[in-house]
Length: 162
Image (cartoon, rainbow, N blue to C red):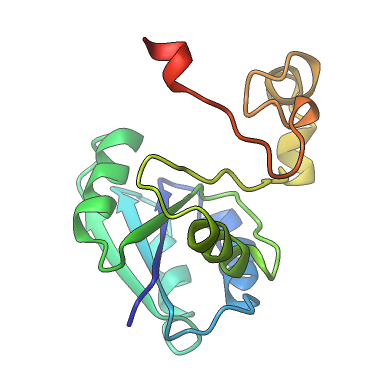
């Protein structure tokens, strides 16, 4: 029975997909426990052929849609997910081998539907070197603010939105 849908949305980033899919292939999580859904948001590069190379190695479903933007691609992916938990991935994410297992373990320990799990995402070196990405991730911490987080920290987002 599927426990996790890893949702990978992409648009014209085929040059990164081999690294991303190789990292997914290295997961310690049983392939019977997860599916990888790739939503291609209307790419005009060779995204499809890159994903096809991994069909024998990964439990992957490739779905192409007309370009509608990241939010629409993620919504599409969530709507076709077969597992009760969805792990959202970007097309430049390199996941550590225990990422899926740790995600599942966290949800088993904290099963409330209001709980979301944020795992650490390391940027590719070429993306991290970009001045804007460095600013939003390191200088100001606008993107996830990892430097201010501690392991197993709970953040009550309801207080921020009420």
